[in-house]
Image (cartoon, rainbow, N blue to C red; front, top):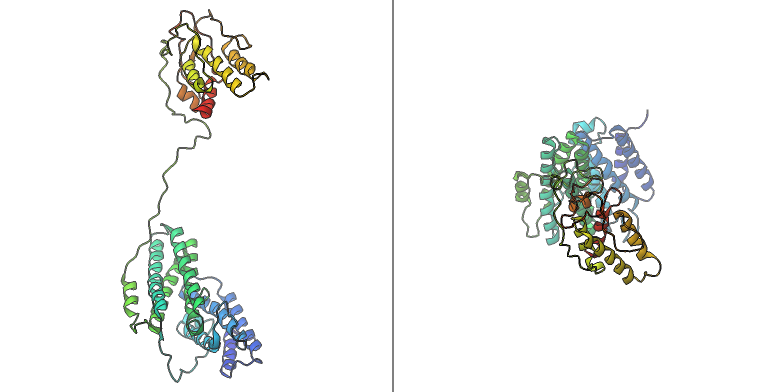
Length: 431
């Protein structure tokens, strides 16, 4: 007949009572690993408190196995990162007894694992007298153990709506801080309590289950973990006294009585609608095209063009696109030439190229010459520069030709040459 998890654990109990000598270490470790494997296979997931208790036993066995392996190690040897000093034997005893107590207190666990109880100790363990740092830690830990479970239960009762990610982060901080504090204490403190505080202890296992239940929407797991965290805080509170000799009973009662709710979900402000890279269909249009003359640009005095390079290029371009006359066009040519001259490229054809582009757009002769006065009928010009520059895929509203000229202005067609786009880019350079 094959041995069960109960059989293997009872065998380890017998060997430990006789003393964990070097000749017993491998046999005890083999028994305890067998118990872990069998319980893990029999109860792979947590859906209720009995499942959680089983997983606490599985995880606490890691600590007992490590303690047994180091039972004869030289002084100063770390056990799972902690120096237990002369108290390795105390660690083995406390964990083994705690595992038995967990199983004996849960009939659901007993269906899988029912170890034989040990006789009571001749002298019950006295409560541990905490120092100031330990008192501060346990006080906060008791509060967090209860409040985190309450917040998780609230989210679960609300259909798992709420700031789950924020609460998960708080639970992780709680578990990590608890593990780190116990590891830093070592000695008798850790030998007695690391199966309560560590990541593979009771509170660490319950915290992991609380997170998993929140993330997988497992109500049974959340409720079991919240109940276990509260019960564990009361157990620790009864096994310790404050640095002034006071009891933690009042801290436990207050933490369990205080109703704590999780933080609400914070929704970031909505950004602009996704228009697929194009202007929205309802983008505001420019002024209605009534067929009347476009707003007049700067007064055309007929005097010389007042181009001034990059300092005035944007202004002159905008004036031209808003209905400026022949002088506005000449001013833009002069500005382009000045820009090329300032850049030191007047001898390599760049200035001519710039003016050729603009001249081609306006129907003027190339070579940088001043534009001639056209005699054709008035042609439309861009009326709403702001709208056109914002999205070149949307045609701008057009108006009539320059109202301040005796003859019609040159035909400037934004569909053939995006002067509005040029103005947009030059504004980034000099605006």
